[in-house]
Length: 112
Image (cartoon, rainbow, N blue to C red):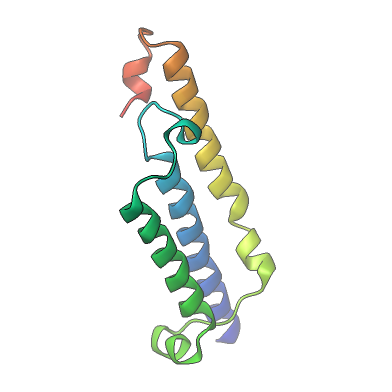
C-alpha cells in the first residue's frame, strides 16, 4: 500500500504541475505571457497557494494521514515538468501564429 500511496501522490503532484503550466498558458488569448507579464496579483496568489498546498499535502505528516498521501522523491516531481513546459510552449507558439496570421481562415479553429 505504501507504493500505491506514493504513486497516487506523484500523480496528484503531476496534475498540479500541469495545471500550473496550463494556467500560465491560458492567461491571455493572443498576447505572449512574456509581453503581458504577471501583474494579476490574484492569479499570482493562486499559484503560490496551489504550490504551497501540494507541498504540504506531500510532506506534512498529519496531512499525509488525512489525505492518504506519501513522501515523493525529486524524480517524481520532475516527471511532469516536460509536460507542463510543453503545454506552456505549445500555447505560446499558437499565440505567436495567431499574431502573425490575424486574418487566416484557420484562426477560428485555434482561437478560444
